[in-house]
Length: 299
Picture 1 (tube, one colour):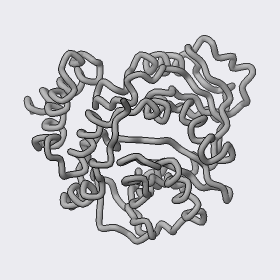
Picture 2: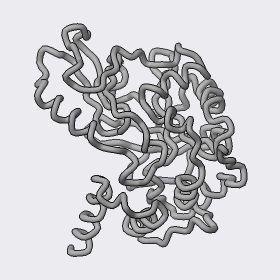
Picture 3: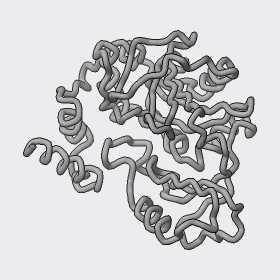
Picture 4: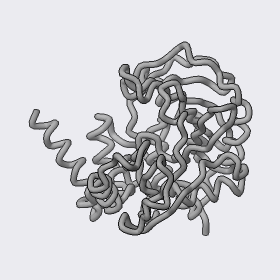
C-alpha cells in the first residue's frame, strides 16, 4: 500500500509539471519503471514501449505539434486528405469567457485543443451548468500534455478551446473508433474501440491490416469478436497511409457512420508507451515493426 501511494505521488508530481527539472531521459526512465515494472532501454530499444520512448527523445519534427493540436490537426489533415473527412468546427477560443453560447446551436461538443480528457458533449445547452463546464475547461487549459509522459509534440501546443458540431453517431454505443497503427508509413494494425458508452464498458479488439482478429489484449480491456469489418475499411487504410507518410510510427483514428468516414485524431504515443500487452510477446512483435533507422531529424 505504501509503495502504491508513493507511485501515485510521483505520477501526480509529474502530471503537474513539478518534475520538469529532470532531463527527459531520466524522468522517462523513472516513470517507465513505475508504470511497467521494467527498466527502460532507449540505447538499444526492441519493444514497442521502448521504441516509443526512443521516439519521444529523438524524433522531434515541428509538424508533429500541429498534428496533435486538435484544431491545427484538422487543417493539416484536410490539406492532405480533403475537408470532407473533417468534423466541422463551430469556434476556437483562447478562454472560456470568450465563448458566446447564444450563437451556438443547441447541441455541440466542447473540448481543449491540447489534451484528451476535457471533452464535454452538450445535447441541450438550455440544461447545462455553465459554471461546471467553465471550471473543467479552465482547469484543463492550465494542463500541459507534455508533463506526464514527456510527449514532445504537446510541449508547445497552444492551449485553446474548440467547439465542434455535435454528431449523433459519436455517442451511439454501437459507434466504433478505428485506430490505425501505422509503422514506417503503412497501416499494419487496427485497434477497434467499441461500446465506449455501454454499461459493460469499453472493449478494445485488435486486427491486422486484412481484418484478421489478433490474439492480443492490452490494458485489461475486454474484446468483441463479433465486430465486422467497416464498409469503408479500405478507404480508411488509404487515408491513414497518406497521413502517416515518412513517419516511423503514428496512430491515425477514424470513425465511420452514415456511410461516411470522419477523421478523429493523430497520436504518436498510445498510452504514452507504458502499455501492458497480453501476451507480453506482442510488445516485442509490435516493436519489431518500427524501423528507427528511417528516422531523420530536421536540421
